[in-house]
Length: 349
Ligand SMILES: Cc1cc2nc3c(=O)[nH]c(=O)nc-3n(C[C@H](O)[C@H](O)[C@H](O)COP(=O)(O)OP(=O)(O)OC[C@H]3O[C@@H](n4cnc5c(N)ncnc54)[C@H](O)[C@@H]3O)c2cc1C
Image 1 (spheres, rainbow, N blue to C red):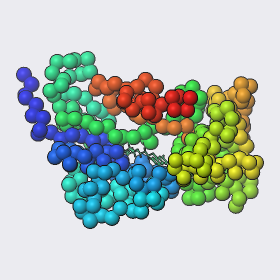
Image 2: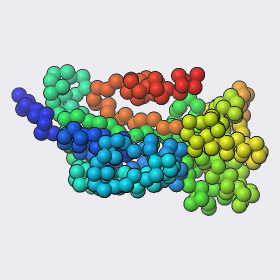
Image 3: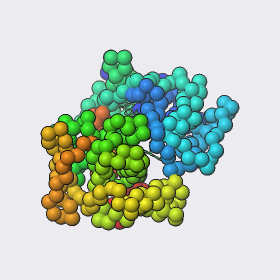
Image 4: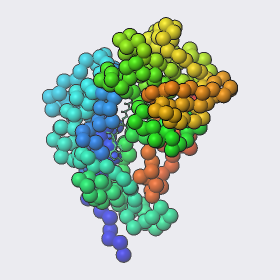
């Protein structure tokens, strides 16, 4: 016989100490619930710190959770200028770190604690039994050991940053792409800090979102200093102007500004644009990289590439949730209620 599960004795387990995980912690404090935050990185906001050099396009007022703000203000914290735009690093240093240092949160955070599996006690996925009444079990890698932590509920706020999409347009990871991990940066490289890596090199940037645009603007700045720096931009869009966005009419001025700056760069002719381009393969060739695909429906090869920046988006890593029953939208892999709000097919037509 399984012992009676005392719901109130166990905490809610929050996976990830990013803005969503810490906001969840603040809300649980307001509700008087016990919780524990399990964060894989050395610091809260560790995914954001990887793009800490990039300026956000939403001002502070949209980046601070209300429950978190109340807790912080009660402890004497002053909110940054609500209209100002933080960098990723500032978001962590001026908001997430002070929040995580509040005594009621600090004592409940485990850093360098990576959740690798989630299960229901004594109930594999197939077994219904008493699964609603038994605790969750989280397998947590910390200090070289795997510990099992029990929780009454689990909030997965592990984000998507650690799980980038590959470059192939069919979404498949190939061995060749994996082998090229030293030459490929997923996300937005800090080109200023990595001058040696990109100066006078040929770099191919893939993607049409703000990450790709930020990477291109960084590389273009480097190109002004090192004139042999060559930039290719590969996108799947039918027309380049589709990436310019609302510009002056954008609801977020900083996002509109990115559209204006990328249009200026495109019109300067300093980058080689290949669109619509669908990548079918990537191969290492004599210390360089070759990309093959279809440009406007015709086979096309780009050779002699030194470096690649792949900004084709990210998706949640749900592998550690395989053993629990979850319902995810089959397209965007979010919970069902969120899906129509973020599905690019519905949003962009
Ligand atoms: C360049 C860039 C600019 C952006 N600008 C804006 C903007 O201007 N406005 C805006 O609203 N949004 C912006 N975003 C998006 C915003 O950063 C994300 O929506 C936000 O960070 C999501 O928060 P999160 O807490 O869900 O995930 P994350 O910030 O990704 O945090 C997840 C945390 O979970 C941890 N983790 C992951 N897996 C595990 C595991 N298995 N076990 C334990 N811990 C784990 C990670 O280490 C990380 O600390 C931007 C994103 C990027 C990349």
